[in-house]
Image (cartoon, rainbow, N blue to C red; front, side):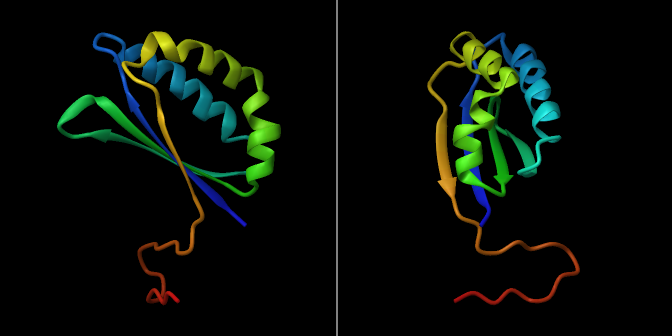
Length: 109
């Protein structure tokens, strides 16, 4: 069963470009992982220092035990205290519907 991670970032003033460079490296590396499904990065239209990352993976246990220990993630996590104004806000969600243009009508429950 898939799992989604919704992660909010509040980037320090003057660190936006460095944050995006570091994050781009992580996103590029993780997209090649076998259990990776998708990721979407959002920017707050009212505050260019705030971001929301939505990741979907096929296996939560793999994310926790394997993916979080990848070298590219360790370097990313080590850089976060210098890049962020506050701790990340991380939510873990279980997808129950995936809508795309041209797909059949949604039926829940």
